[in-house]
Structure formats: structure tokens, C-alpha cells
Image (tube, rainbow, N blue to C red; front, side):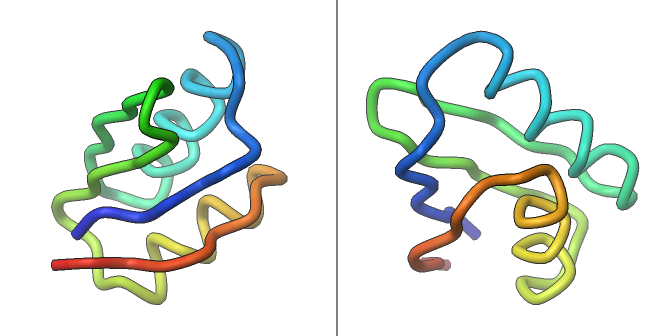
Length: 63
């Protein structure tokens, strides 16, 4: 699934989100230009919560 995360702006944001998803048991691919995070290995609610817990807003998810 892919999430829109509008407040990611830099490499630190990318690393924080990737780490949060990895700590939750999944794998993330971050596209800073598009402000999206593609997550594998987690259900959508858990992935969104991990991103929120890292301090980022999650707007939507697509499969």
C-alpha cells in the first residue's frame, strides 16, 4: 500500500519513516519528491500508526 505523507521534506524524514516501518515489522520505500511511502509487510492501520508515531501526518492510503 502507498501512503501520502505531506510533511516529509528531507533525508532525515525519509530515514525516520523507514526506521519506524522497519521497527513495526515492515519495509518502506520513500519517495520524497512525491511525498509517498510504499509499505510492504504490514496491515494499513499498523503502517499508518507507525508513520504517525514517527511524527508525520498520513493523509491517505492506496493499494
